[in-house]
Length: 114
Image (tube, rainbow, N blue to C red; front, side):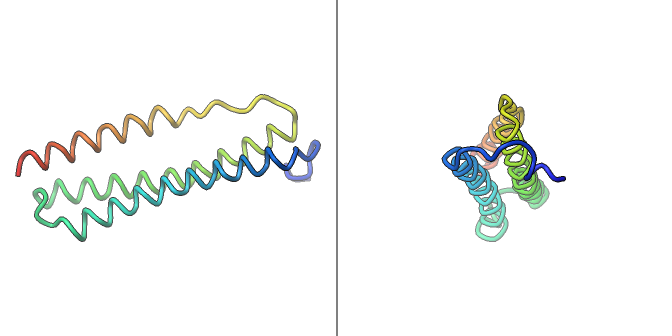
């Protein structure tokens, strides 16, 4: 038996809210990927090649990680709702906000260096 058939089906409103949250995480991952592509393709003179490549790789890996996290979070929330349990705390928010702050600082440093 899979988790999708365990417990009772949650109210459809909560399931739809969970799906909207999943889509918000996916939109965030797409934004990170768009930033990586934009920096790589549209700003070749932004910074030295090694710095720019590192930033693009970091943004791309963040996008990949967020998309995986979105799925894991959706499943965990759906499972918790079916079991009438508390929803798990999203620990990745600390990493996401720290990583975003680091990317902003690195980007500003590169722009000021021009």
